[in-house]
Image (cartoon, rainbow, N blue to C red; front, side, top):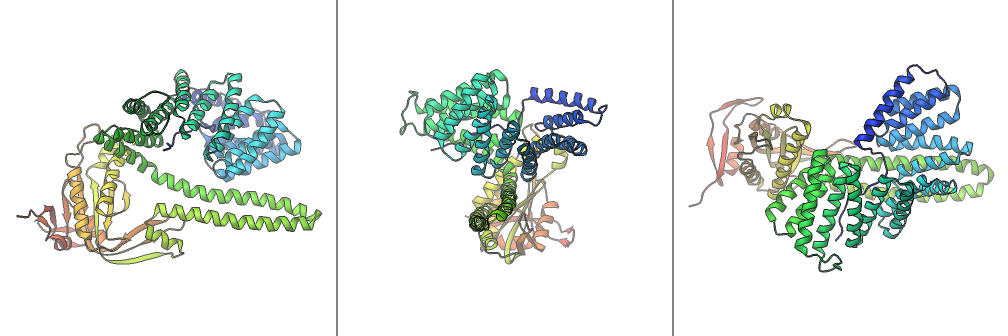
Length: 601
């Protein structure tokens, strides 16, 4: 049983103290720039400010980097052009614009190679490795090893340590733990020589995670505890929370595997679970203050597992619900990032192939036979690449849309439009949410929506409804698609009544009472997929609009429905009528309040 822990990597992060110090440097440098002459010193200062921005404001870093590049080109100063391109690259990387980052790094690298500047060739090669680390591990290793060789030739200990740690991260992701540990220990030894506390703590924790993944829990705890001690001394709240969460996750694994592993710690399962829960709760408390949603969903998942193993099923369910909440809050963003990652990988690979093709065209003039052989090899690689990426895209599509719809899209059926003669639509809306959100900070607002909507998702899955979308504080689900079903009306009624029970006397964390309106209708709809890059599965029809009107004209805490819906379900449920009312777009309508199942005598 393996856990997925939070791996510490060297990218672009900074402590609060470091950010303040960097901002002070930027502010003072900008004031100097206002009175600087247009010379190479100004290029260097603009580049320095641009580079300083990458960890706190990469958008501003691009502005200063472009100014440095324009001035260096005006002065025809190649070294300045190269340095400006590197600064633009790190800021583009900070914004996750990988193709642009790679383009700037390649421009910088070409100039440094022409100048035979080995120190800067090593730096840029390491930067390019960081780009590929997010899309192509083999390419990343190629550039990292190039940088490492140059740093070793120049005896640059800091560069060797940094690149060794990054190489370890690549091997860790590939589950080549022996290679990862060799790289981490090499980096650790160098950081110890350099007395670099952050580098030491980072690699110690990564070593612990590599041991944990192999089931060597005693060693994993040893290194993670040491990392925690160092992070406490540094005062970095994020690193402290990560260390505690990882330690809690390890104790959870020890308890789960206590019969199948050597118990070098001489600890019982209940003792391990108690420690796991303690560490995880402390970690979650810190992460909530920081507002780090992704670690929260991970550590709440660990906490739920530990509580379940302890027999605390009620607490386990509460923790699991919070795990789902935070997971749902980043779900759309993660899917967008997955799609963007696939698209970016295509762009990076294509850009790299264009560079290779240009080199091959030069080689063609020297040797036609060699060029022909390389061309055939490249063609084969492209075919293999396309096939591999297509499989990945198909797998991703199945995670985003209903399986039946995803399969049809995979078979190139687009647009997709289906007519369903009988479905039931449920709308759920928070009463007074606009006023509520105006008085709270964004984190409280999003946290409340995540809490509520995640519980609705669980109920939708339980009663067989398909979640269509959320619009602000409104939740829409439908029964009877994408698979037609005869009991769609009763399924929708059951979910609505379950929501009513769940949300009865619902209060936010600060004690504010929040009620809900619900609307139901059934009838014919058209459902289909719209969009070209980011597909959306949606439905349209009079029943959809009417269900929405039932919700908006309804009573707080009640479920309002139409005559159609009542007629479809009155054999199973009791209703009370409301006085006829004018419904926008429909005229006068008789509506009903769904009370509950008919009590059988």
